[in-house]
Image: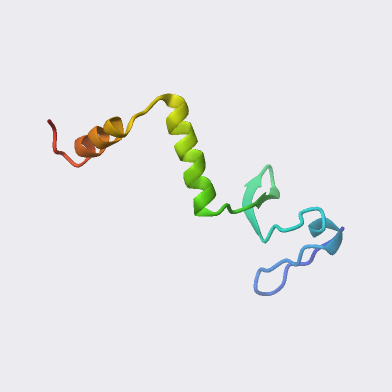
Length: 79
């Protein structure tokens, strides 16, 4: 597949390449070994992220008191 860079430094990705990533509108772009790398990025709703954080906190055994203490410490209100 071939893609041409426009005068505004834009590239249109070929349809056959893009169809491999349904629902993806954003790509992380990096350069490695003289190649442009595109990595598909899917955004997650805040509600889903918060639920994952809550599950991880529960799995680690962190309590609400631990969180309050950490916030107080970070804000400089040492007990």
